[in-house]
Every structure is written in structure tokens, then in C-alpha cells.
Image 1 (cartoon, rainbow, N blue to C red):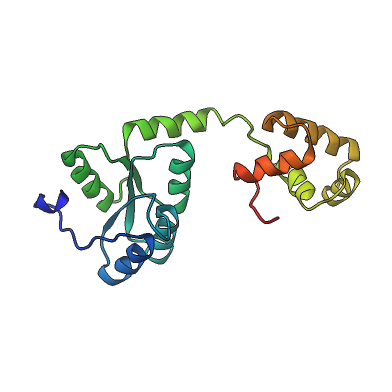
Image 2 (spheres, one colour; image 1 turned 90 degrees about the horizontal axis):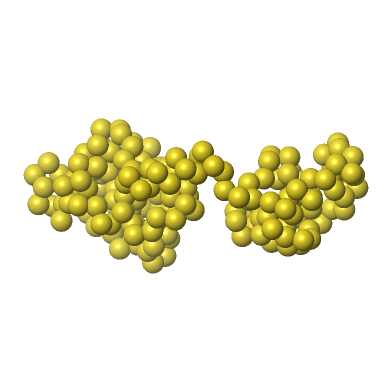
Length: 190
């Protein structure tokens, strides 16, 4: 679709995240259009590798997925843009050229979601201190141990845990850790 635009030169096409990373190293494109769901390495991982290894290459995610988590993961990985596959050809070509100039390109619904997310943090957002408490709990520490590790009283640990339970919609420590891992608040494997 883009190959017919005289302002653009399509230099390659990859069918997986792994091959996209390899092709970027070989072909040195200015802009990469990246899907999120691909065989092998997914689009977010490929985006992260490309932007770390080749900081001058601009990656635009082009996908059908527009969930908050997908958008945030892609942007955090270094994507310079996020467009949906129903973007008209002319707008897509203009977005590629804009990204090549160093601009950020976002589909209007994506931009609206990002702004909304920034203005209103998602339910269950934990404070940095609550994350510290939950991290210690995930390590199997008792309330007294958590208090000593963080230099706070045991009653303060209990207060933090009650707030964490309320924000995450759970009733106990194990469920809090499990939900926090599922939501990406805590990394898995702790």
C-alpha cells in the first residue's frame, strides 16, 4: 500500500519480530511500521530492541489493538507513534513522513486514551510506598519484617496493606501480590 507513494521507499517487510530486528540492522530504515502480535518475538519486544540498538530509527506501531496496556507498553518500549490499521492510506503515509522528521504520531483515539490515562490514573494505582510494601510482602516477609526493612512501624505496614487491598479489590496478601503481578505493578518471579 505504501510502496505506491512516491515520497516513500519501502525497503523491506518482516513476518516476525525477530526478523524485523535483523532487517533493521541490515537495511537501516528511517521508520519501521510494527504490528504488536507476531510469531516469535512480539511487536513491543521488537520495538524495544530496535529503539535501543538503533536510536535513530523511528518505530510506529500499526495494529488493531488499542487497549491502554498495549498503548502504554508500546510507548514505553520506545515507539514514536501508535496508529490503528483502519488509518486511511494518505494519513498513514503522512504519519510515516512525520515520524521520519522526528514527530510523534498518534491516532486520535489513542491520543485521547493516553490523555485520559494521564489525567485519571487507573483504579488500583499504588503509591511508590505501597509498591515498596507489596514488594516486601511478595518476598514472603511478615509485617514486622516489612516495617524493619522500610523503617516504618508495623501498624503503618498494616495501614498500607489495607489501602493496597482496597485499591486492588482483594482481601489478603497473597491475592494482592497475585493481582499486582497480573497488572504489571510488580514484576513476575519475585
